[in-house]
Length: 80
Image 1 (cartoon, one colour):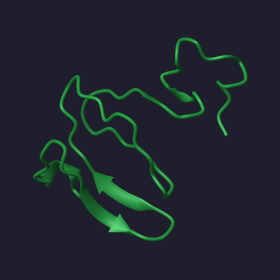
Image 2 (cartoon, helix red, strand yellow):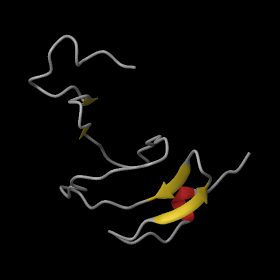
Image 3 (cartoon, one colour):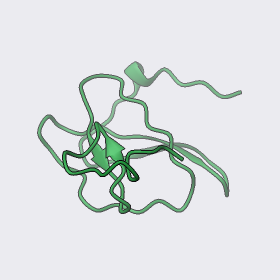
Image 4 (cartoon, one colour):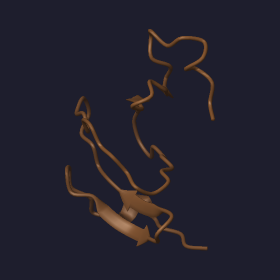
């Protein structure tokens, strides 16, 4: 198992740091300034998101997100 002390990383906005990468998954640390948006983004590996400080909202191309998008239908609110 790999571990990282995220608080000790010297991250800069818009400059992700890849901590670990395989064909199936990648661990990346990224600082996003308050109020900033990442915009459309595509990942080719599985994605796990951990927020160390602050809040995060996201929506997938299929309309799934967190917190739930306001116009989400009953079908799109199911998690797979």
